[in-house]
Length: 276
Ligand SMILES: Nc1ncnc2c1ncn2[C@@H]1O[C@H](COP(=O)(O)OP(=O)(O)OP(=O)(O)O)[C@@H](O)[C@H]1O
Image (cartoon, rainbow, N blue to C red):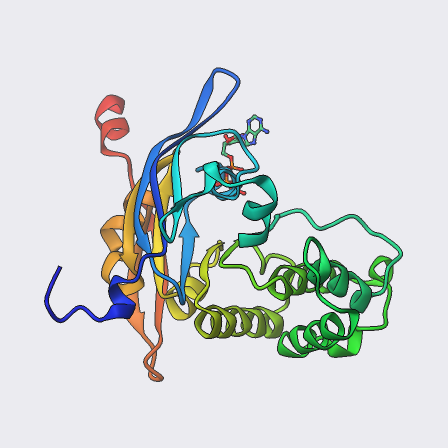
């Protein structure tokens, strides 16, 4: 640690030690350890299909049995009462919430009031504030079971944000969204993360969104950690070849934003050798 390190840089956030998850006899996560993920920063969790990203997020949320430790700001989450753990962390699953006949505003207010003595008036203004922040205030009086998949995903995100979590875990929050909402949601998530000092971890498949909008990245493959750190420090053609098996070029567009171009698939040299 250097003497120049600021408070914010050294601030304790989320630490993960030896996280291991098995489904039956099959081990899916093989002892993943992550360095400090600091408050106020968005970390994108990236890796191929089936690499264990959702399993990792669910284990951090305490929704899947696991071995190892998850420590948030010095507190081992496994030792906290269930209600306290649920208050600290908000988890948005990949699958959309069931279609219930409830107005959007009510659904977000219910999420705000759950487990806390917040007045209806206060919950109402906070719910509206979050809906406005996500650009969906016009949906407030619509019923959830009348919304599109993407709109329901946004309401799920509003429910997670309105609870003012310390830890925000989002599993593919952009998957059902059009380009405009992908942008709006990433901006809202960044804004809330910074303003409230949240530790945010989100799974995305679009590498360019991660490069341009996340602060840090975690790369996983086959249930193992491949790399972690500041987006542009860790993201290299070598690591992308290792994680995804593709040949890539990293470029910076005229506006200064990085993006990845995929040139092809990495040939497996061991298979090549076996063929001859
Ligand atoms: N409930 C379960 N029971 C048994 N195996 C499971 C279960 N959930 C996930 N798996 C397996 O665990 C592995 C990791 O799955 P996981 O959903 O965590 O990957 P992922 O990286 O999130 O994938 P994707 O990008 O496709 O969503 C996969 O091989 C999957 O088949």
